[in-house]
Image (cartoon, rainbow, N blue to C red):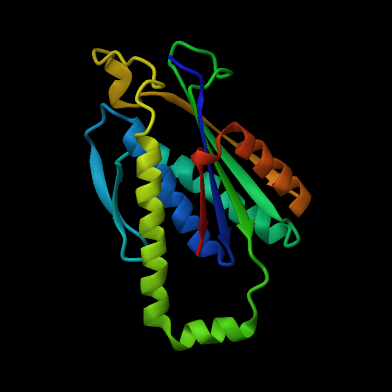
Length: 206
């Protein structure tokens, strides 16, 4: 197996519900692509968009994703001056301790607080066009995410298809979160990821 594959998603948003929905779709999409043996699937539709996607039908995983995303909302609500929040999802081999991941996804959420009232009113007056434009941007982002999920064919560990536990979870995983206090801290993170591989960075600004 080659070195760890690391991807960074940077989301600029001014609306918490929209941010949560994009994160929920993204994480479910990643787990769908990384849980290779599980055929227990279900269709899901975005609450704020007409985007339909497939996710694993797994109550424990669904609750874990929900708890992680809700924690982001709680932090931003409690600390309105917080610049951003980083959610990292790492995957590990079953035989390895949880200190040597083979893949990591970093989701850096930055709250855009500069949107003025005139812009909000303009959006309200033209809701249909705004929603269509928003959905197109989210769809374009999802396609990019799928490309990244399939762009490194040699970094995934070998999976024993006879493993009886595969129906529950193909790979071990762990969420890790970190507050980003200010713009300087964000730029430091961004530069760090850029130095690793700028092609593995996706930026979405809705």
